[in-house]
Length: 69
Image (spheres, rainbow, N blue to C red):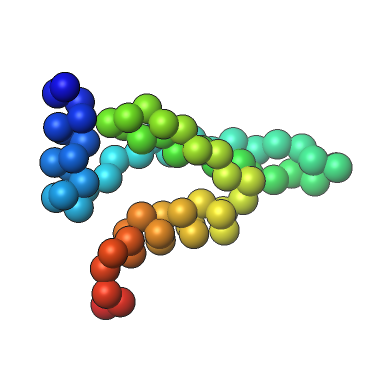
């Protein structure tokens, strides 16, 4: 299948593409940001309750299988 081949090739090249969405919500009288990332190849969507969670995910994506630079 073409999509599977494309996803493998992109992963091997070290390339990732995501659509980032962010919006504000009111929780218990406080405003907070929420985030989601959608993988542009697979369509998989992940939600994040705060910026820290989003950054941890992105760091894992970037550092996966690499030595510290």
